[in-house]
Image (cartoon, rainbow, N blue to C red; front, side):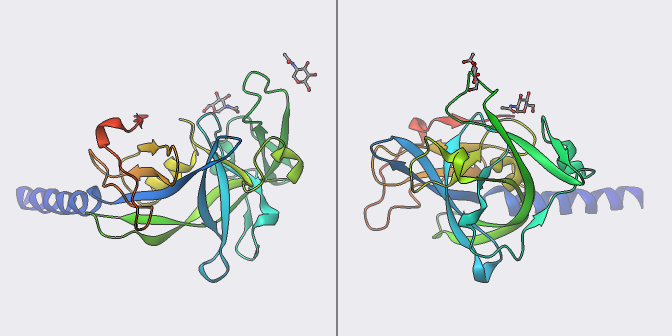
Length: 233
Ligand SMILES: *[C@@H]1O[C@H](CO)[C@@H](O)[C@H](O)[C@H]1NC(C)=O
Ligand SMILES: *[C@@H]1O[C@H](CO)[C@@H](O)[C@H](O)[C@H]1NC(C)=O
């Protein structure tokens, strides 16, 4: 009887692993000229009213932050409370009454973190792309996506089409970790930065990434072996 139960548990675990292992979660990467800033695009908000938001890629930022005025509808935006485990997992968090605050560093002042601004931590729905076994990318959403709402002043130095910074650090709540945990895939990511046209930000998947996925009729030529691969586990 006990052996039988173990077998079923083993088979269902194996089935679950097989089902998730090939899915990769992807975003386009653009290069802004002449600033040479690399940024990606995600959608924030509920499906019918979601807004595209351009975010600067930054490996040193723990939590994504952006000017929330770029989100058209705030109807699905929620404040994070100070007592929540989410707030407690944010390094250097603060509180404004019951509201959780994030101390955001400027991505351009990595040696001077005294130039910071604290802003409210919020959650909403985020929409990105997913693909598996080379099928064309489709939209997938997850919530909660935790980030912080900054004011326009904090965007000083960031190129105009970009309205925030996407956190890609190895901390608790970087964007890639929120995605891989929401979809229950291996917590890793890779950035294929474009010299021109469109590159790809990959999350999850197994040992390699399907390419190319963005770029329309003129796909970006890429070799897996040349990808700057960052595996943080
Ligand atoms: C960091 O920035 C603050 C505020 O602008 C300034 O007062 C301080 O001198 C700077 N520190 C260094 C080491 O540059
Ligand atoms: C990011 O989080 C780590 C802990 O996970 C912390 O040591 C570091 O100071 C944080 N960085 C900034 C810029 O807040």
